[in-house]
Length: 232
Image (cartoon, rainbow, N blue to C red; front, side):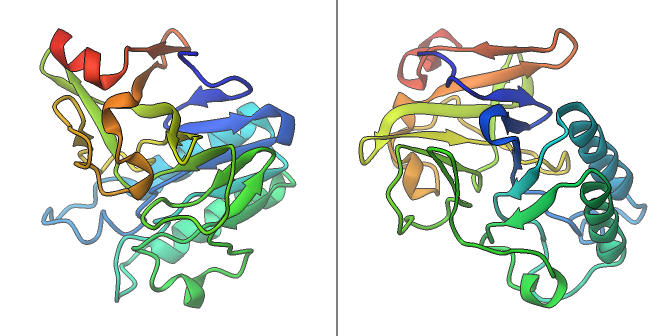
């Protein structure tokens, strides 16, 4: 199977229709303010605008943010609360509950986030977690973030999803690209087993890159990396 069944891909996120659940990862709010660029990079407008478009398109009953909602470990950069409040308002107006599965960057989350927080959140037969640690719960399929996968094709770096069948304790794993566009992404073209940080993606050669063509509203599936890297 080249693309997992029962799932829709769009703008660095996925939607699970049977559970009416939207999942995204690695928003890294505050990355804008902590960059070396003096001018703001449009993080607030980009994140809130794209999130609003996803909610409008899918009308989810719940949204799961699979970790690293925040970027800074110890301070609250300017504009973060404004963005958080707008994301919550968008979900609330749509009647959707927002659940966060904390990532390694979310050390300040408890002081800022008033909604549900769960290290591992089950959505149908998927288990959503950030992916920086071994999950405690067993599942048939996992959705994770953490590594910000990207693939370079003809000199252009594109965010990509990674999908592997039976790659972690006999279970399937789907890794999402970073939702923030300020993350450069980790190129996986030449990645070897064990190169990625997530313990769920040690067998990276068995994962297929999935790349979105948003203009055509199409998700392109490529061969497993162990085969695909020789074609690039």
